[in-house]
Image: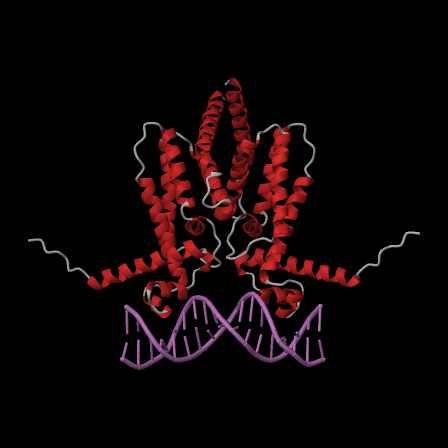
Length: 201
Length: 201
DNA sequence: GTCTATATCCAGATAGAC
DNA sequence: GTCTATCTGGATATAGAC
């Protein structure tokens, strides 16, 4: 007979509250900006007194850390949900759109994950590991698609460039994000041409 | 007989002190981060008591505004110092390097000018006008080089992408900035190809 | 776990003497 | 113009009762 391990209802509840706090924090930073997050506002939003938050997080930075983790997990989840494509070009196009969509739909999240604007905040080692995994996965997919690692930095530069220009200069618009397909094609053409040149040598 | 207009020594001195304060502010944000600037630190650095700063600037945001203005003036100055080139491609390459250099040599300045990370700060109308002039100038130069305006947003996306990846992920390094020439060539090739296609129609 | 109370410190900004 | 003194409000964080 298989015995279910005893559920730890207290731990479950604790975890649920942590999640609730992080959710509320996202709502606040989306509305007020990443740097404007305060424990006062956050506590108010979840119906607590500010010191009670310390039962769930050691510090404000620990909350940023949980947000950083959650954001990267979400991005990784999306990448892993990529459909199967026959053509690597389609895969690249899909990935480009996925990243751009991820950044522009929540600029505050992009600011936390990809820029370093909060004085003193460094993601913890465990958290950072997920961010590394996101990058690793992208690299691997590119390799499987036959695109050499020497093109990876160019690729991230191009796509993040469109994303950041969009959120910095015209949040909510499409002036740069509409260029994803064109940029992907330009990139693929460049890869083809460079590889051919190299082959001639 | 030509009479020199009376110099206003007081106004000159006032202006000199303003400049000195802005210089000190740059040093602080370079060392501590853009968001970490405080009037206390700033006053200490210039040998004043904090309230004395209000003789020169109405508010902290007014100091950011002066910095924003100065930064854009510096960028405009550099663009205007561009040498004459026979080949528009060389001009583009030069401009790409100039922008990348400008951002990576002072990430805090780039953050102030090109990202929107300080809650509540908006450049004043007069100040913003200089920023607009920088963009206009770039657009005009591209047009003179025979590159259509439809390529301008791609161009800014590419170059700023390399810049921002560099300062966000590896400040002080060259992992992305070393790619400027490659990206410029890729861009030019793309423009050539697209124009040819369009000509065929 | 949550609260009240508080510590500690810092911020930007103003009043008014000199 | 610069100072001292102060206002007002905010921040993160801790102590200790319940």
